[in-house]
Length: 307
Image (cartoon, rainbow, N blue to C red; front, side, top):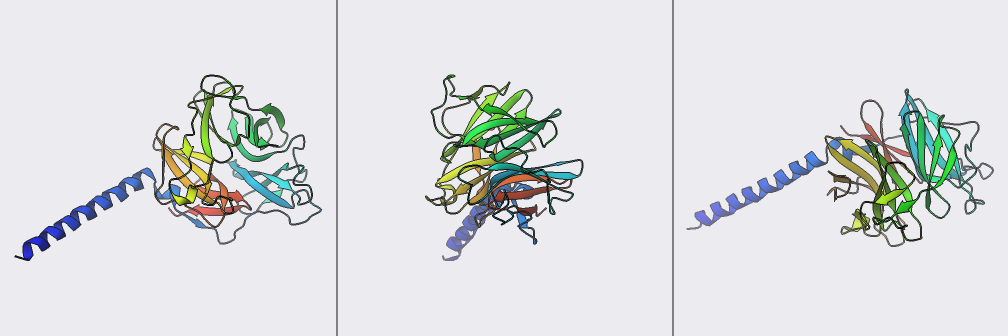
């Protein structure tokens, strides 16, 4: 009389156990290990502010950006001093043969006409496009043909879905994706959510919808702030790397991942955050063999894909 209920319990346990395994395998397909599992480089940080109050880059902040071209790593970063940081933040450049040992450009800072921080760089044909925050968290476009000399093209013109200007206020941490003739601009407003606007001429950007495509919560790790940093496309899926805060006062940040089929609807990784310890503003760089994750704030730390 007691054996039959016991068999039933075992069968149910096996059934639910299999269900959990299938769910885990499904997420592994959506979030492959090489895109979510990283180990810190033992020599971190690989780059930071000089710590010298007489230097323009005594401290660095926000999202710097790294690209690899012709076996050289190029990094743009924002520098400032404790004394002048509230007034101006400049753009600097550093290079490296391996993405670990960096040399500052001798003519830094390379751009001084406007405040530049939280930059994203994308090359198209022979032109480099830099989308960056300027004073007041206003996204600007700068262009260059040599990585060093940048021309400010002005603040981005972002419109609501109906074509009218978005409400006044900050719109920053610009992250850009290009597919065909369409440019996709992801931007945050007060880190309360991420919006998406598109353009075919980079002169006018129009929201695909007037509500955020990536919102805070419901989990604790991103309950109070989100901002997108980088996008990777693999096997037909898009992976957004975003930083977030679990605290109302933003005293600590983490790096996280979400996946999408269409750049509009996003599913967050159940294993978030992928990097904690107040490391944020992360970007992905393919070193020719696998991805590296660099967190750029408050200093540059390297995380190497486990796979």
